[in-house]
Length: 228
Image 1 (cartoon, rainbow, N blue to C red):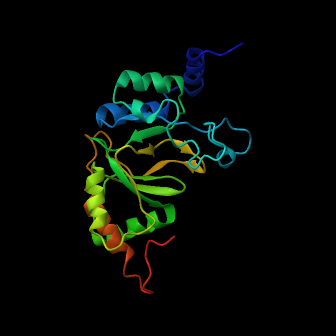
Image 2: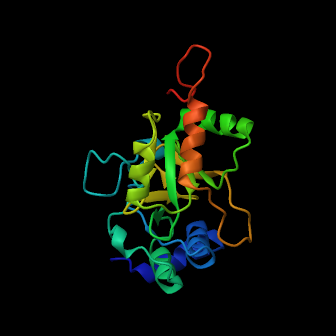
Image 3: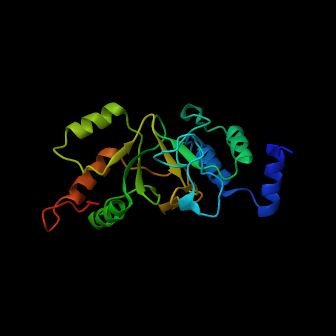
């Protein structure tokens, strides 16, 4: 017999004795911080291989970011409406939380995980004030204030060089947020927003890129401190 979503939801709550962590986190993003979110594709059901052996639930067998991307619903459905957020995660309690970046929502600058860890050490040494930092098994993302594509273009044009490992998650982009599960392991806050606070403070993208460029140069051997 086909299991209906409502019954699946009741069984989940009964077994776990609490509301799903993803729902609570998604509601905080949407209602407390006014960040538009939507559920991600997620991973296939576990088959005894653990997280690393689970592919994306989307139809693409060569998915580059298994589980950690929008699929159905699409990115344009991202919302701050609490009723919609509850409906989504009540029906898919373990769905990843996807942030639609840009507009009035946070953007991000990301690096490979190893380079990201080195970058945070260097930025702390420089006294750089950072906002929240999201860590996945493969990349670390530094959240920044919203910027337009024009602003990003002008910023990058003004630089003689930027680390090739940087990626920019701006208008029309997305980012997976904790406590989601992605291929390779758990998504977590490396630098978490303060609990119970208003929308987290975010640095300007110019300040972060300037600091990353400075942090990546001047290695003793003349190379990049953020190489990976």
